[in-house]
Every structure is written in C-alpha cells, then in structure tokens.
Length: 246
Image: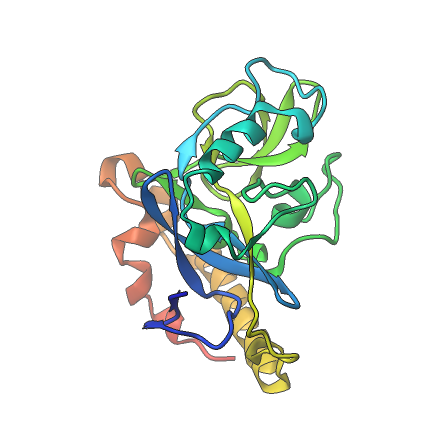
C-alpha cells in the first residue's frame, strides 16, 4: 500500500497523519490516518466525497443503525477495489464505511456536553474542515441530536444540528485498515516525538490566538468574492508568525 508522508513511500507501518489513496465509486480520494489502536488504523477522507440525506424525512427513529445513510454507504463500499477492501476492518455494526460521531470529532455528547472521546487529530479545527467541489462543506456525523436531526460539522469546523432529510449535506466517511507491520511502539509514541508534538501543539495554539487578536484578514476576507478561502490564498503561509518558536 502506498503511503504519503512528505513523499510517496512503501512504509513499514502507518503513522498518524499519513495519507493513502482509496477508490470509491470510480474516483480516487485521499484519506488521512487519524487514530490507531494496535494494528487497527482509523482513516477519514480528506474531502467530502458526495452529498446525501440521512433519512427521507426529518426523523431519527432507529438512530444511525436504521438510517438510510448506512444503505448509501454500503452501496459505496461495493465500489471499493478488493486491494483495499481486503485489508479494511468493519466497525461495530459490520460496516466498512461509516460516519464518525459527535464525540469523536468534537469531544461533546448528543446533549452537547463535554465528552472525553474526541480523537486527538480533530482537536485541531482545521482537520474538521472538509471541502467539496472546491468549497468548504457541511458534513454529517452519526450522532442523533433530536427527534428530527443528526449532528454535523459546518463549513468552519464547528458542531451543528441538521435536519435528517437535508440532501445537500456532505458525506465524509471513515474506515479502518489492518496494519500488520505495526510495531509495539510506533514513532509517534516515542518519548522524544511526544515531546516534539507537545511543543508543536503549543506553538500552534499560540499562533492561533495571536491570529485571532492581531490579524486583519479574517474579519475582511470574503470567500465568495475572493473565490477561495483565506488559508488557500497563501497569505497565511507568508505570515511571520509561522517562524514563531516556543
């Protein structure tokens, strides 16, 4: 399996942040490794791969298990080549493609209370933003939030409550891959790399706070007029704050 880090390589094992290609419905998508548990590595597509409703009507009866979305994802699973399908591991419902939960993505439960089940990767809001056809999109989560709606993620990466019948909301599926080459202590878990990650995370938090306080662009940037997001414009890449060290 080809793994993308800074370059394409045949990796000994998959690390958090690695990307692979997955073909779904005759189109190739990039997916990122966001969590691992032993030999099981959880991936999520980098983009919304399509739009679909959770149910024909605004109802959540039967929850995620009984929703129309699962049937849609099952049909998409049938389009995945055997090369990938043979190393995929199903979730607790036996599905090979599924939606993530409110807890996993946002660290809150169905009652919008704090929950400690958030995947570390999604603590960075940028990882919760997913494009579709060149524009940031809303995308579904599997969590029921009311009798008529499921949770979702809005274009800015924040939790949102959406009526189940909305057909324009995006689908950003998750899946798991069996990684037979997983060592007992992967690189990301080594003490020196954990320390480096803590420093990088701290730096990122400081930069984000300084951006919010001092940067003029977020307040005046109009994505529709400019034809792209501020992040895609390259302005942020040139910012001197990127050289900040902690």
